[in-house]
Image (cartoon, rainbow, N blue to C red; front, side, top):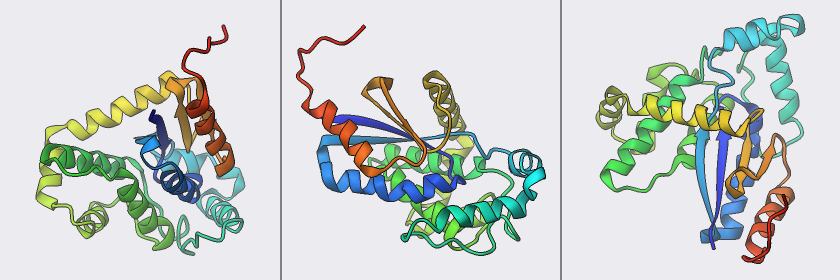
Length: 221
């Protein structure tokens, strides 16, 4: 049996960045028993609205930057750049989401492995750890070509409109599941939803429950 896990993130969400290690641990522990599908959420589609205005009474971008650094202090495996949300303020996560979907499209069309988790981690590292503005096309080109993806193929994919359609599908699915934020983990066809800073053991327990549940047991009404 293979347990399907739909993981929803916004690439600019710090909680999605710090939780990436848990998804990697799921891969290491369960191997082929799990299939992880990555999806995007629209939390930071307009950072001026979410941070500039939404955090206006808490210091705006500077205050949000302090919040992000405070979050990261609790995790030994991440070290954020001092300039994020201070000097470096991406205007939107949408460009990065579109390039991620373009990479998926190119991989599928060419019969190559779809490594969304690795690509996502590289984009997150570019912003959070290296302090690069991932809303800028030049930065995204550098990140994705550094992953040995062909720039011309990615641009051709973007020109088809397919990456935009893929983003729209993800947003519609997130709405269908009534997801509250990033990261969100959807298991068992939406019957089990985990949200936010969820510990690895909780994710593991939910997977084990599905794997160990008898196939003929009746569902509760």
